[in-house]
Length: 92
Image 1 (cartoon, one colour):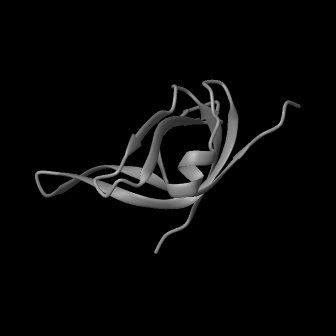
Image 2 (cartoon, rainbow, N blue to C red):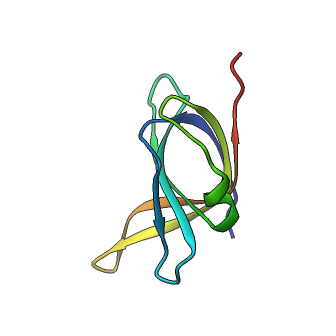
Image 3 (cartoon, rainbow, N blue to C red):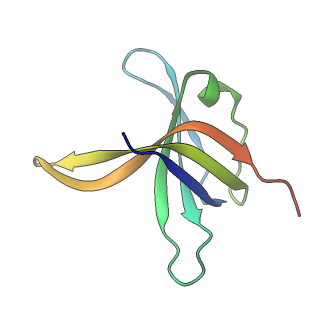
């Protein structure tokens, strides 16, 4: 298993949904804080974490989780970050 820690900025409004099993789910994009080549990551949260998140575009976050491949036609077309924890960074 892989583990990922991402520090970045929320760049869109989190979308609240339910999984096919009826579990609460939140999806949002985070842009890395790298100035030279900022990267965007699709973040997915489930369960209690999804219910407790209160994020807005522009919020700084630290996301802990694991990468899961997005498959298209049997090939890896990108990755999603399945979050175990999301911490909002305080105003500095």
